[in-house]
Length: 136
Image (cartoon, rainbow, N blue to C red; front, side, top):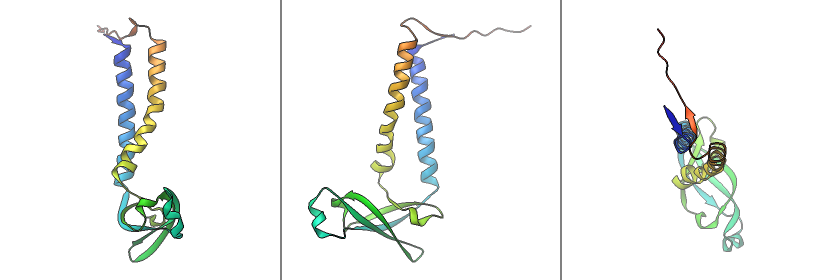
């Protein structure tokens, strides 16, 4: 059986995707969620796109605050907060794009390196030859 370089590239890409989704799913499954609000301490900062703000949320009746630098359009709105189970002081703003999509962009770096390796090291008609021999 002969595996060409494009198939090797696809195998590597599939492994990268599997590791990425397994890691994100593990974090998601071991997180708890609550609601909170992003408060801008200085009203003058609201004219900028991004500002230092404080994230306020409650877990089991106790208030937690986390200092964040974020988009001012999120200020004074109810937000979904994700925090690791057992560590409510580590809260972060949760959204699908922040949790799943943006980290997926980091896959481009290993993907480019993997593609450069495969398409440089293996020539057009080369690949990996796998042979099976039956033992008698």
